[in-house]
Length: 119
Image 1 (spheres, rainbow, N blue to C red):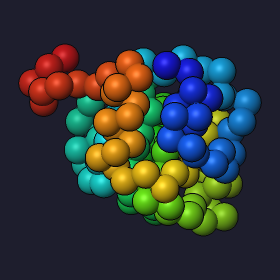
Image 2 (spheres, rainbow, N blue to C red):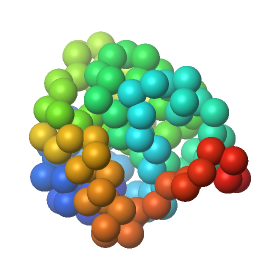
Image 3 (cartoon, rainbow, N blue to C red):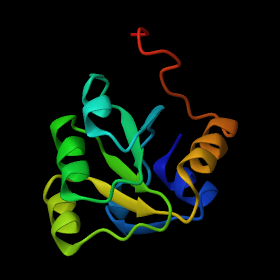
């Protein structure tokens, strides 16, 4: 699913990385625990999180993710936005809860791993 389509579905504000809205990102991961996000090696994912800290952006950088969507109207800091820009990571924010955001994106075709033992 294109990142721009995700933004439309979630009524999300694009904070930075508008140039990436055309990217097709087939998978999502959603968590507020970055240790859980780090266990998977797929890089063609969007990270959906309510953890609005620099650690979330750094996790996306480590995994070479192209986008982070912050839920529950979380507002990223200037430091987070700068780190995202430096690493070509788009940051979006939405008023949806994490559960609702994941459900809406899934309903429209975005997928993720169903089980922790899935590769």
